Length: 563
Image (cartoon, rainbow, N blue to C red; front, top):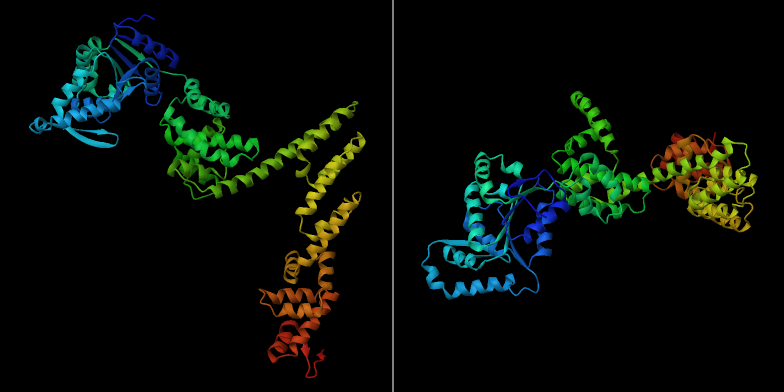
């Protein structure tokens, strides 16, 4: 591939920039390549991947915060990459320099100028000019990558930096790869002038990395099972920032495993909401900030929101609809994870499970209506289609159906001669196992009549549940609904005078209301309760007072009731 010197290209794809970089490395006549692009589009990652694949050794340094050429040289010194088979490994090279430093300690002590630079997490002070001259005298015919030109310290002028790059090219015969965000660099007038003055002399080739959204999505989410959902949202925003993509990936990896049993529709909405909320936090060009979405949630929940924001909320709602965002109960935990890097897992799961029940129920209702379409829509001979639909529907959903819906399907199944008894039995077994209400259990008797073994199980469960009832629960239910069922009356009638005698001596909130309700029922249970009160009234003056003034039951000296 041939290039004209000092060309500024319009934005090109990641693949094209890779080709430019590889060709640059092979061309002996080209010395300085500038790769430009906005923050987060993947410039540094691309360069490092290509250099590791196409060179034996290279040096890398970010100019971020660097305020002098000495600091930059020290950064270059300790950030070298060597392939494993290269004998000039950075560890050996640094060890050699430290040995040199120890041997020349007396000379170094006389040199006032020192540099501090990090090696494996430590900071080592070495004689500046003496060591750096030795170091750069040994760097020949290599590749040096200098990143983040726009983030240099104000103390380091761009013309000084570009002059140093020219020095490296001339003295060390090295190739230089520059990486920077030109938009940011040119915001500084001094840097803008320096770049215009030196560009023609120093830089051989300039390329602008402007990958498509799909390129960068593929770079981060290539193996993600939900890449299509993620891609659909990010296409709308045109976001290309890989750092933002990594943050989205991190949030997804924390929350998706907790939702793997939810309905697919709810899982999809979770992914959409995570992507949108992350963009609202991290993407400066996203049309809504995350704080506005929080206030938008509050406005929908009826919190105290000003009229001015209500007008804004309408606009926010329109934008969120465009991104298919729907506010859900677990969004607060997504926001908490984004803002604080932690969240309440239990609250997230509980809220999601509750939403999932609603989603599953709605999904089954929709499928149930679809099942009946061939019946309602035609008088055609479509028995086979209906039979297949019934079988397919019950295979997926029979354990989630209300009994009354199953009975409707049973009628349709009989008309098209398909046997669904196995599904009915499985549903009944589950219902018997999960139901604790005596009335509901008794209502299953007629439905389960064709399965003798289930009738036995049902009777046992009813007996167990009756034994677990207590007087307080039954009377509280009767007071709440201002009426009673046959099962409740039978239970109260089955309690003996001694049962009520013991019950009356417990500490029971609102006992007065429960007792009066039972006495007014006029049943066997009412009479047994009255006799229990009479027995207690005969034991003390206080109980006699309670019986008379609370329940209008007066007991004489001989224990007889006075009317």
